[in-house]
Image 1 (spheres, rainbow, N blue to C red):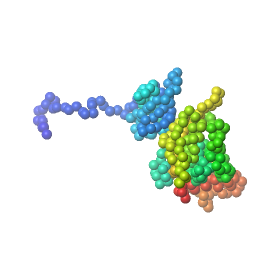
Image 2 (image 1 turned 180 degrees about the vertical axis):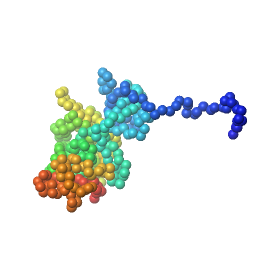
Image 3 (image 1 turned 30 degrees about the vertical axis):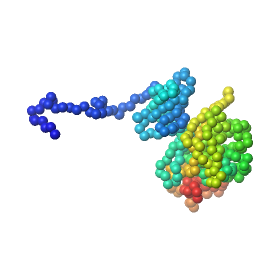
Image 4 (image 1 turned 45 degrees about the vertical axis):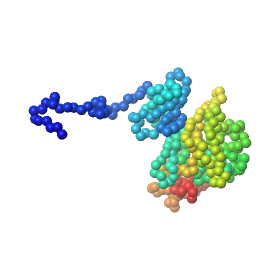
Amino acid sequence: MRRYGKDADEDDIRNRPSRRGSRPRTRIRPAHEDAAEGMVLTVDRGRFTCLVEEGSRREREIAAMKARELGRKGVVVGDRVALVGDLSGEDGSLARIVRVEERDSVLRRTADDDDPYERIVVANADQLAIVTALADPEPRPRLIDRCLVAAYDAGMEPLLVLTKSDLAGPESLLETYAPLGVRSVVTSRDTLATEDAEAVRELLRGLSTVFIGHSGVGKTTLVNALVPDRQRQTGQVNAVTGRGRHTTTSALALRLPAAKGQESGWVIDTPGFRSFGLSHIEPSRVIHAFPDLEPGTANCPRACSHDEPDCALDAWVEAGHADQARLYSLRRLLSTREAREGD
């Protein structure tokens, strides 16, 4: 190591330039007030396809990446974002997402009930369409219950979509969920492309709706019927296991076609799944979806599970303030939060 005497001056000392440059670091970030507004349509390996409309220019899809200043903040389908950079939408162009606007709703799930890591499925959706087949594969009521819990927790309106009514009747399943007041629609493979598609479309107008369901129930087939100009690959149910194959690998937002004078809407197709973990959900939030029962919890003991001897909801129902079937449905949904899906 070179040593300098006490009489050394600045000319005797060699200053090496910093490898990172001489520009000082700052925490101040640009406001990007002139950024264009967009909506994330799909995500693929760190690249985002966004729909953007800038000034008088028509809507166009552009490719974007997440700006460094966002750090670890996630960007998901349905997010409203601010974009800068190349917004032309031409091949090879790439914009940057510099801001994610506040979300109105967030649908979350975990891989299983022991997984502490929650995944955001989609943002800013109004409605959750729970798609289940009446046969081939058989309905899984516990999985439906879990999706309902997730919808109520996210503040989204649930919609039960029953497919393949040409194979089995819907009466039993509809009776199970009647006390919850969940809207429902039944489709058949024979009429899916005509009147059934229009019946479903009427329930989606003016809304952003997430389609969710386990593999093989016909979810993507239904989405293809609703948005025929954007066909997605479909699969078959395995004859041995009774399970479907994952043909949709990423969530995708599609605009519903609308006739003149009608409202449009958005359909968000999601990958099929075989489990829906709820470890991230607080049971106390589910009661908000039961306005007829919620006032009855005022006299419940602290941290009441609403399914114990001292629960005040029993007295509330006995006094005639709510229907017993509604209390049973609430407790069934809360129990599915505690029990494993296969139980």
